[in-house]
Amino acid sequence: MALTVKPLSERFGAEISGVDISQPLDEATKQEIRDLQNRWGVTVWRDTGLDDASHVAFSRLFGHVELSPTHGKAPRFSEPELFDATNIDRDGSIIDNPNRRLINAGNRLWHIDSSYMDVRSKEAALLCHEAPPISAPTWFADARSAYDDLPQAMKDRIGGLTARHCYFYSRMKAGYPTNEEELDAMPHAHQPVVLDHRWSGRKTLYLGNHARDIVGMSREQGRALIEELNDWITQDKYLISVEYQAGDMSIWDNLAVMHRAGEYDDTLYRRDMRRTTIREPGVEAADDHFTTMFASSFRRAEA
Ligand SMILES: [Fe+2]
Image (cartoon, rainbow, N blue to C red; front, side):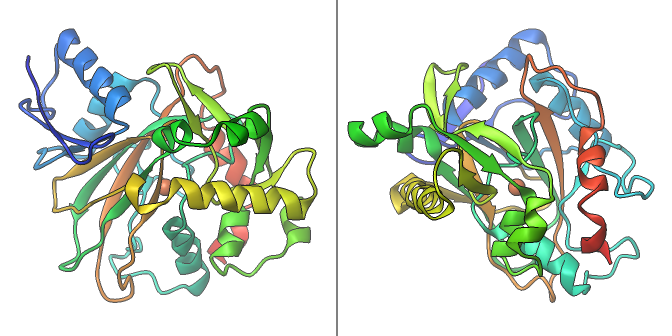
C-alpha cells in the first residue's frame, strides 16, 4: 500500500495518511510504516479512529509494548500497556495535587522517555482522546541532524562519553522538592552520549533533562557539557511542534529525537493523552520493569 507522506520540515517529521491503522495491517504495510518512522523520526497520524485496544494493537508493529507502571494501583485504562499522560484524576477532575502537577511539569523540559532506565524505549505513540480548546502541542527536536551538524572537534570530544540519567533530576529542575543528596539514592542509568541509530545508519545525541552527570567529569564540567549539547539540539532550526485534536496521534523515536510537552494552563483545561512505549528491539528484559523502577522512587510524588 502506498502511504502518503507530507514532511513537516526538511529533515524530520512527517504526517502520514492513506491507510486505516485502526484495522489489522498486512506485513508490507507494517514494514513501510517502520521504514517511514526510522526515516522521519516523528510521524503524525490524523483522525485515526483508534481506541485503547487498537492503539496497543497497532503499536505492536514496532516491537514489544511495555507495561505501564502501576504505582501500586489497579491499571487506569482497559489496556495495561497505556501510560497515563493526562492531567485528569481517576475521578475525572483536573489534578490539583501540587506534587503531581510538578511531576507533570517535568515533561515540559526537553527529554527522552525512559533514558533513566537501563532498558531503553524506542518508539512512543501518543494518542489524543481529549484536547484542550487552546494550543497544547508536543515539541520535537531532531537529535540526529543536530549530531550531524556538530563541529568535528565536538564529535571527537564526546564520542566515547557516558552520561548518568535520573528521572528525578528532571523533576528537581522543574521545581519538585528534592535535592542532590536525595537524588544520589535514586536509580540511575548509564547511557552513551552518542548513540548509533542502526535502523537509519545515523548517529544521535542521547541527552535531555534526565541526563545528570557525565561519567569521569566533575559535576560542574559534566553539567556544562550536557547543557551546551541540549541547547544545541533544541535550536529553532531542529524543532517542529504537533497540535492535536481527539483521534490524532504522534509517534516519535526516542533514539532519534528529543521532545517536550508544550505550555498550557493545565489547571483550567482537560487534556487526555495516552501513550504506548515500545522497547528497543533486541534488548532482553523482565516485563514490568517500569513498576519495579518506580516502586522505590515514586511514592513521595503521589503523597
Ligand atoms: Fe515524554
